[in-house]
Amino acid sequence: MNKRIRTRALLLLILLISRTVDAQKPAQGTTDDERLQFLIAAYDGNRNRFTEFSARFRVVKGSAESDEGAIAGRIDARVRMQGIWCVNGDQVRYELRCEDPRDNAIPKYRPEDRKAGAKSKKGNCDSIRILGDGALGVNYSTGLEAASFSASRGAKPQIFYSPFSMAVMGYNEEYGPTAPLLPEMSREADSIVGDVGATYDVIRVKRKHSTGDVSVREWWLDPNRGYLPVEMRYYENSALELRAVATRVRKVENAGFVPIRSVTVSMTGALRSVTEISVDEFVSGPPDSDDMQISLPAGTLLFDPEKRKKRFRLRDAEVVNVADLAEWYQRFDLPAPIRPQP
Image (cartoon, rainbow, N blue to C red):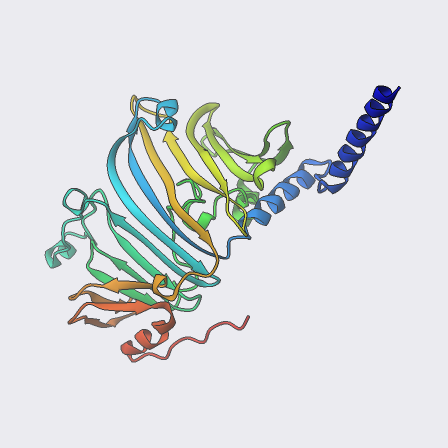
């Protein structure tokens, strides 16, 4: 008798828990558009939890014999870079440094290259240092040995490789899972749907090009890990052309979920072109002041691309802190732009 009572009590408890969990689930909608809006909002809910953080990561570019081999780590590396990404609201510091400058450095820019129409000689790797405060920005390139100070670029530093981007979302993750909200994508796509599956939910964008080719881009989101995209697939005429996989994901304290390792593989050719991004450190919270600055070597050419006649070279190496960008910008004898009011 006691056993029967305990069994019934256990069943009632399980039923109560299941109903409570169902009641807490956000509404996913019944139409394609409702499900799409839900999935985009769910993805944004996780991504928007990262407004203050410091990250150290690595980027490896190379090749592999197969996508599964690349995912397993069997990558023939050609370029290795160390990355730093610190964010404090509108303030951003971002760096990519070639691990071995002897193998990866870009040849120095020469004045005679201008006559040939070349802006810089591209090699395997160009180390960059970016600093921005939402109104002003500076972008230093080792290939050009120059730093551009700009008001228009300060609001949106151009960041391509990052732990979140998986090397397939474009600059500032513009073409990630939220891309279907972009007007140009909405106009050009034949269909944009959100599918709710048993394990993963999928945002699928289908487009028929003027050439007659049909492309499909899929984002697989994990509802158990903040609707983080754990895989992206791009098809051209039903053939898989590009695949990006988040092989490891971590929950960051006081924030959301972030890919700790992602692998992007081009599925064309005998050897697969591979980009691997792996995180060494990811800490939520405001970065230290020393983390929000970049160094500029002696001899660096400083210029404002919007005022081309305003330029000068640094006699000594100097450090630029994000708090001092307005002071640096005034060296060009130009008024610092007014920051937008919050």
